[in-house]
Amino acid sequence: MIITSTGNNFGAEPVEFKVVLNENYVILNGRMLFDRKTEEYKAADVLEIYVPDLSMKRSMETAVFMNYTSKQYDRNGTIVRSWIKDKNTICLEKVEVNAAYTDFEFVFFCAYLPKGQRETFIVDGEIDLQIENLPKNMYCEHYCAYVNESWALICLGIENIGAVDFGTQFTLDLVNFPKDISAELLLSCPMGYAQGWGNSTLPARIQNGQFICDGYTELQDPQVSCGVIKAYIVKE
Image 1 (cartoon, helix red, strand yellow):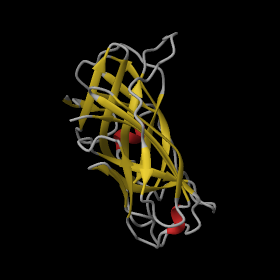
Image 2: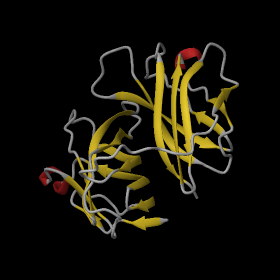
Image 3: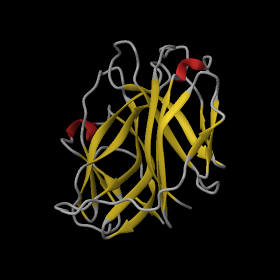
Image 4: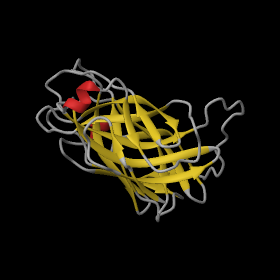
């Protein structure tokens, strides 16, 4: 299912979201570009996105990526808190960063759970995921995946990302992961040096049963130790 935002309070353009609406959860996928220089952004204390009716009135907090999109300083990102305020409002934490960083995007591949839920959220549909054909000296020892009728969850911890050269794309085979599930994602990579804020983020995607990453650039630390991804993916 696709919904289109009806507005926001920080000067961004409307955005389309892929969604799964359930009384016990809302799963949201999408990207929203925004500019921290706008007067609307400066005036907002909490960032709000207005949408058609969701399936719950209020949610607990979840995590959304806030990613810097300009190549001037390369791509950095962090997570911000997000929650459903009411059936028509998704809220995002406003995070202040260095004034030199202005062009950002929010990247949603998250699940919202109802406010006040007392029972444990149990994810069904675990598959026998296996990781094969990694580049030499790269490792992936921590991983899992769950596939349901309308969505999937995948978690990967990839070690020694720096085993590949600058700008070199690398691919991992996701054995037993459905080939008809695709998504544009971000691989979050803690760096080995002090930088302005957040972690480096590498563009990545899942396609045809593979995890494909563009690799790191000359502006990023070649000694990067690992990359982590956790994504709820809305199926087509």
